[in-house]
View: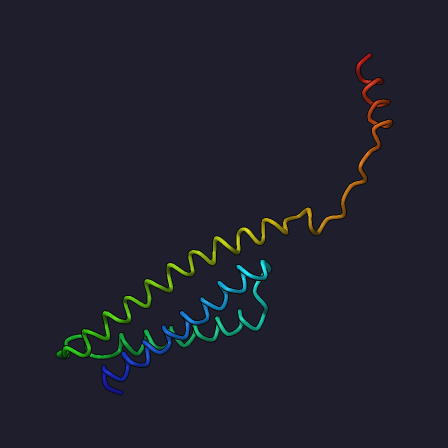
Length: 128
């Protein structure tokens, strides 16, 4: 595989990651729930493909002459990675909000609310 093909493959993986991050972002904004397991599994698979792609890029000869097209591809990839990072940061913040809104109160049973009469009795006993 040539350096050009490796770069194109890497760009394709980055584009797929970007689309998945968009899908996760839409889900978090619209549903305000944790992403489904299928989405997380796809993310793991894509991250594994990204790791393989990066390994291929590193294996290519770093001293080989880079043409104008390869430089443009490199810039395109950098731009896409920045978009992914920005969207991922927003998704992390949304995930934090979703998980905090669910919090332990959502999973723990609610304590019974004491009646005003009970509160007055307790207050009368402790205020003496």
